[in-house]
Length: 258
Image (cartoon, rainbow, N blue to C red; front, top):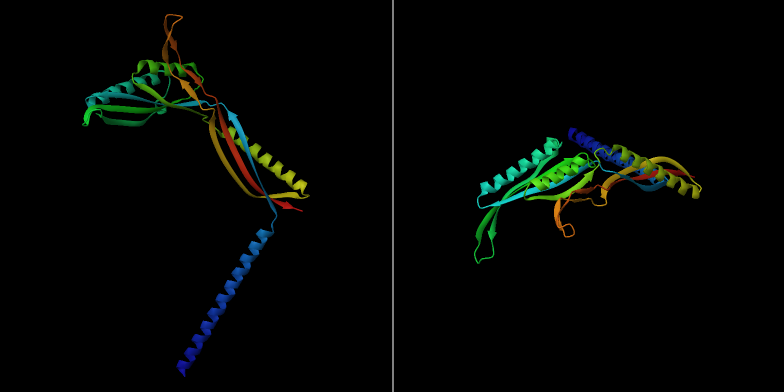
């Protein structure tokens, strides 16, 4: 009798668990379905607008490197180290602060003569690359410093020059404000044409970017022979910073009401 009673309780408990699971699952399905219906019933309009701001850069990045070749690795490295010391001395003397002088690559490699039938050692090649930040692009001393570098350091090569705006906060804020205003204006015009009114913002997304317009160029110091003057003419560095293009893009979804 006792065993029968226990079996009955187990059956009742199992039935209760099955009923509870069914009730919970149907309740969840009902809630999820209601949420989906509410989202699908909402009338929305999505607009996107991009606003560009053109600004003058105020800082310049100069990537340069020096190279030396020698039969002995220590000699090649020593010559490069002396050139780097000269570069730093010129930069610091002309007003560039130490934190704006950064080593970006140091290498020591071997070069082999491949003209002969066998592989023969030729010399060691030592290189040292620097990135320098000039924080006053249009100052006379900036171009004079570059001229001093190119005339006082052997085997000096300028790899790349780029420009930037140190503080983009105001420019990006202006671009964002205009982009949002224009996006809203576009949404209002579209809803007006369809006899509807604009509601609250449902979603808002933003992207940004910037690039130099046009690609900056720097002409380094050189000498050329002028036949009309029968002598050497010195050509000094000319820097054209151009403009930076800052872009803000907004994507906004509004509710629309009939």
